[in-house]
Length: 476
Image (cartoon, rainbow, N blue to C red; front, side, top):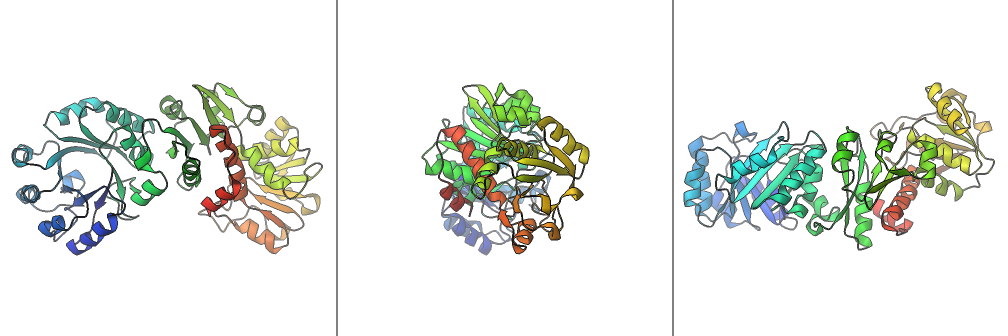
C-alpha cells in the first residue's frame, strides 16, 4: 500500500488534500500536529481512505505544541471515532492506556532516528514488538546505501505487521522496495513540498514510474550508481520500458559515495546497474570479467549480473558511434574531443575503432596526454581547438549541464563548419548546441547519446532490442 501523509495547516485544506490524495492513496496519514484547527470528527467522517492518525510532538521532530494530556485526548477521540490506525512513539507513557481502549483501532508503535540507521535493527524491532504493538514502525536516516538493505532484510524477517523506512536521499531505495519485501505500506507525498519526512517521493511517481504496487519478491532489480544521481532520467526510461515489454523488473537510483559499501550490499543483489560519475573506473576492481572495449578504455558504465558473475561493459561507445554514423562516415574524419574523464576515454576509443583521427583536448593537458598515450591518439589544450582542422567536435565534459546551463566549453565564434556532438543531455539543448546551430553546424544532442547507450544497456540486461522511437517518446 501507498500511504499519503496530509500535512495541511487547516482542516479545510486537509479536507481538500485528502480528496486530492484519494486516487493515488491506499491509506491516508492525518498529521494532526500540522493541522492547527483540527476538527477530527469532520476529518474522519469525510475520509476517502482508511487513515492513520499521527500527532508527533516537537521532541520527536513533529510540530505539536499542545500538552501531553491534549495529545492523549486526541488519540482517544480518534479511537472513539473509529480511526483505522493511530501512530504513537515508543516509550510514551500513555501507550498502555490507549491499548486498553483501542477497540478495532490498530496501534502503530514507532521509532524515529534522524541521525542514523541503528546498527542493531533486530533488537529495536523486538523492543517495539514487546510493547504489544499491532504494527512496528522503524524510520531511520540512511547514512550509507547499505542501510537500505539492512532495513529491507528486517522487513522480510518480521513476524508481525511492520513499516520500515530509511529517510534521506540515500534512503529512497527502501521507500520504493519496502512493500515488495513485505512491509504493510510505504509513504509517498501528495506533491513536492508536501513531504512529511526527508526523502519522501511523490506518490504519483511511486505509482506511474516505479509501479510500487506491482513490485514483489520476484522483481529483478536494476539501477544507477553515482553521485549525484538526482538529475538522471534513466529511472523514468527503464521503468517504463520494463512495463511496456511486460518485464517484472525495476530500476532505482542509488546515491553512492562509497563504492565498497554498495558492492558489499547491493552489488550482487541487482541484475545489473548503470555506472556514472565518479565511479566508472573505481567499480572495475569488483567485477569478475570485462568486455574488450571496457578493458581498452579502462572505464565501465554498465554491469550485468550473469548468475552471480559480474560482467563489466561500456555502452558509451554505442551511444557515441550510432548517432554520428547516421550523419557521416567516420573513417579518416578529424575528431576533436573535449574532456579527459571516463566518457571522453570511451568516445576516443569508439572513434578510433571507426578509423577516425582523434585529438583529445582538455583544460588540464597532462590528463589528455595520459589518455592519448594509452590509446594512441593526439592530445592538446582546449585553446588548441581549430575548426579549420576539425570535422567533428565532441563535448564530453559536464560544462553546460544543469544547473550551469549558461556555460560553454568553447567560444561561440569557434563553432562553424563542424558537426557538434554534446554529451550533456540535461538540458536537451545546451547553450553549445544552440550557438552551434545558429552558426550553421550540424548538431547532435546528448539525448541521442543517452538513448543509444541506454538501448544497449537494456539489450544486455533483457535480451530485447528496445524501440528507439518509444524511448524518445518516453523521454519527451
